[in-house]
Amino acid sequence: MDGIITGEDGIRRCFWAGTDPLYRRYHDVEWGRPVANDTRLFEKLCLEGFQSGLAWITILRKRENFRAAFAGFDIPTVAAFTDADVERLVGDAGIVRHRGKIVSTINNARRALELQAEAGSLAAFIWRFEPDPASRPAIFTMKDIQPKTAESTALSKELRKRGWSFVGPTTVYAFMQAMGLVNDHLEGCDIRDVVETERAAFVRPT
Image (tube, rainbow, N blue to C red; front, top):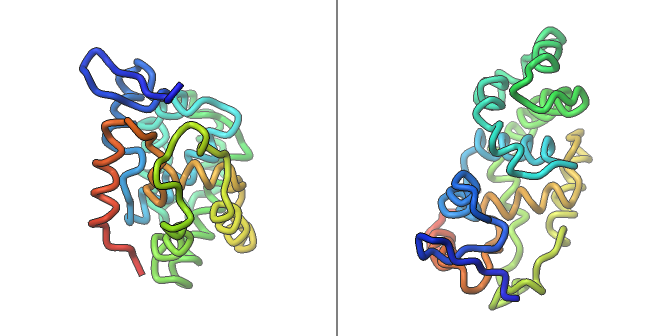
């Protein structure tokens, strides 16, 4: 009932990590660790958009293909993609071949360049939406899991106002969870305290 599973390696993890080694590694070394790198933040926003309607493990298994297809999610490079690139990507069986999401990724790269010019960096803009620690539960349990928050709704609204797409509040909250703006590892998960220590030492971008 507490949402914790113990692997054969003895590590206690959040239930969603399951038994897949790739998913476990993502849970253990990536999810919830604070990120200030614009390329990684952009990649994750894009992949969360591609994940909409699918299981995250599907995207995770294709992540290296996505990186190869989208030039490592280098923002200026993706922003310069043309109609020919769209057709190339629609024909790439290694990724999710959703034309709307592919076009959205290119659009969002162009909007990201504008946001970098406005705020100094994508990271500086995004981290403005980190929730006040006082608003967060002291002990995070299954009952505290939610699909979106006031902060993810606000960030979604600001991104969409600037022309971004596939950045609804639920997609944005999944992004915030993964990039360490919140620590949603469950109480009892062995990774929770590790993430909390990293968040405490993390220098917020300004």
